[in-house]
Amino acid sequence: MRRALIAALTVASVAAALSGGFHAAVSAQSKPRARDLGIPFDGTAGALNAITDVAGVEVGVTTLISGEGALKVGTGPVRTGVTAILPRGKASKDQVFAGWFSLNGNGEMTGTTWIEEAGLLEGPILITNTHSVGVVRDASIKWSVDHGIASQAWSLPVVAETWDGYLNDINGFHVKPEHVFAALDGARSGRVPEGNVGGGTGMRCYGFKCGTGTASRKIDARFGGYTVGVLVQANHGTRDLLRVAGVPVGQEIPEPPATRAANDAYRADAVGEVGSIIIVVGTDAPLLPHQLKRIARRASLGLARTGSVSSNGSGDIFIAFSTANANAASAAETAQVAMLSNARIGAVFEATVQATEEAIVNALVAAETMTGVDGHRIEAISHDALRAALRKYNRLR
Image (cartoon, rainbow, N blue to C red; front, top):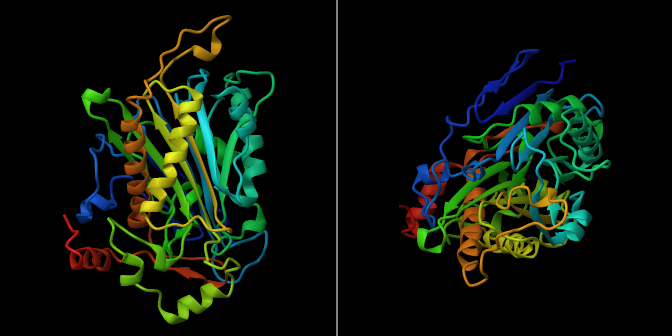
C-alpha cells in the first residue's frame, strides 16, 4: 500500500513528499489564473489578487494524494487536505471582529455560535472535507494551546467543510492532526496556491474539477483605499448553471452524455447541487461585527454571478473578518474602536461581490483533471474552450 502523500504547500515554498512513485510539485506561481486567460472582471485587484493582499493574513495548505483504483475504506484512494487562514498570522493571539452567514445550511462551520454572540473570531479558520471536521477542530485547539495563542481557557475554533467523497475515501478519515499542524505551521503571506490543493484537493464545481481559489479588490482612495480579499473552497453547482463574465459557459461546454449519466446516478437534489462552497472574506476596513455579517451576506451575490442557485443539497456558508481595531478584544474595560460609516460601506460590498466571483473562477481555472475513488474522473475546464465561449459572446479581454 502506498503511504499517504503529504504535500504541505505554502505561499512561500512547496514541501513535497515522495512515496510509492508519487510526486507532489505544485507552485502558486506556475498556473495561469482567470485574468491570464483574458477573462474580464470588474474592479481593481490587489498586488497578489489574493486574500493575502490584506496585510497580516497568512494562508497554508496540506494536500493529501495517494492510491488509485477501487475504493478500500481506510486505505484510499485519498484526495483531500486542509486549508488554514490566519487573520493576523501565526504569531498573533489578537482576536478579530467577525460575522458569518449561512445562505444554505446543508453544511458545517463550527465556532459560529460564539461569533454570533461575541462578534469575535479567535485563531485560524480551517477548511477540510465533511468527515474530517472533528479531527481538524481538535487539532486546531491543540495547536493554539501549544503555541500559547488561546484567548480563553476554552477554545471554539472555526472549521468548515465541503464533501469530496466522489474522488476521496472520505470515510477512511485520512486527515490527521499532523496534517492540520503542517497547514498552520506552513502558513505564509504572499501568493496562495489554487486548484487541487488543501481542503479543495478533491472538490469540483459546476461539473468541472475545482477546489481552492482566491482574489482581492483594492477600494478607491476616495472611499478609504481599503483592501478586501476572498478565499473559497468551491464544490457546488451543476454544469448548466455555470456563468463566467456573464456568459453561459456551462451551456456552451455541456457535459458529455456518459458523464452526465454517471453524475445523475448519485445526485439526490432536484437541481443537482449536492456540493457546497465555503467563502472566507477578509478586509482591513474598520468594520464592527454587525457590519461584517452584512459583508458575509454579500458573498452570496458574488456566488450568484457564477450561476449558483444555492440548492437544497448545497452547504453555502460564509464568514467575514476585519483586521482593523487591533487589541480591541483585549481591553480590560472600554475599547476605543473605529467603524466605517454605513454611508461608505457600499464600496466594501461591491469589492466583496467582485472578489468572490473571481475567486470562484480562479478555482476553476487552476484546477487540474483528477481521477480518484473507483476510477471516478473529473475533468478540468478546458482553457481553450472557455476562451472560445467568451469570445463567442465578445467577452474576452
